[in-house]
Image (cartoon, rainbow, N blue to C red):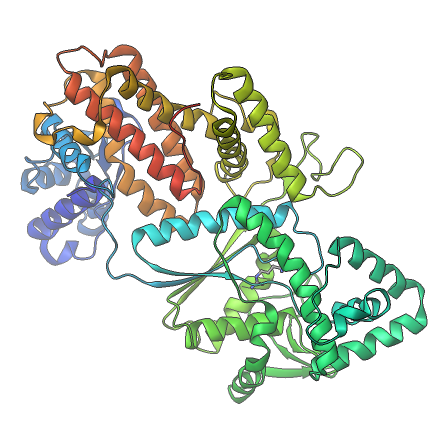
Length: 578
Ligand code: ARG
């Protein structure tokens, strides 16, 4: 019974069918965490819902429900309020008993889901030879967090990097490569092409300025697409160069992801298009082959197409995404497919999903787009360096770590150098991630080193500090949290003990919500709340040397472990001292 919300839902649903029979079957028990804890911990609006169905007064129904529900082991007698709300307050004994369980539970009361699903998460997905920019950073951080949460729940998660590694731009890149680094085209040749983004810019400059170069580029696209070994080797060299730069960022961010670039789906394009054609979903328009999902029109009211084959026979982003979604369902047997990209691609994905649904590919699977807003500078404009260049991720992470280092140097100069570097890394990278994840992802977010590294407020350093504080209590009292005996916990008593106990109990509910809504900020809000509650508890309740020491140490330990687990689901590590 570690998820109190679920337990209450179950009990109310049962009471509803027991008291009202068929009329209540399938009715929602409508239990939610209470917004005002003075009136209880949870609230149910079930009586209001039933009143509509049964044509009776909600307050009366609420009273009948309360009489019928078997809640004594969980709650104090429920209170009926206002037009018919039912308020539940957990018994201190119930809270304490659950904490006893958690003390010995690695998963802190979060049961693995059943049945587990197969979930594809398509995230990060930068483009070869282009900058891995702050938009990709958001996708990487958010996608990794969602993957961690769903993995923790026990789902089989396929982390997919849908790298932009195919397309006409490779023509000019290969042509340029032939001129500046012919060795790269030789068999077995592995070369360092240096800054691949600068390489891209130079190729593009030549492409725009030089007709002969442009013609050669077009020829190279054709050679690549028909598999000419030399062109393929050049393409591989370009991909390798970018991959090294991407991998360096993933390593620093501690993000695991499997590359399944656009090119991976090339062999499956013909069967995908054949199937769409056989289903009658392909319409020809000015030589191009299009799918028109229902309900999508442009400003003039004309239907919007997904172009699955261009008039020159070539394939594009739409083709690959149609092929990928089919592959994910048919071959990878995904039950849920999650795409994490900027909000600007919302229509693209809505159209892909609509077309896939029409083709019957989503009959047993759910596809979701997880959009996010832009990263802004402190001037509220698009995030740029002072000289107006796009910010390189490497520089951004370096600066976060350097600033964290300056803070650590000042706060704890006694810490040995190696430990200090580790702490700075954990805090710097953690702060960047946390700042991103703690925003409602839909809105644009203002990137501010000062704010994200602040030791107070809703930041990674504040949460990590709360964790460190608990560890230092143990050091001071020479305590080993691992040896606390659950049976030695006495029932929670003080308002702060109870508030903290209650907050700890919410973890399983919060994880459910994050997994359902794919909103990491629900988890950060919870952790911030929990840390503040812990802080109130610690300020007002003496721990070491108090007669209630064991119980309070257990609360400290559970708070720290809950924060550590929560942060780990955000992809953030903790440290024992700072
Ligand atoms: N490469 C794309 C970009 O940089 C993102 C790809 C997202 N995934 C997908 N299946 N379309 O915008």
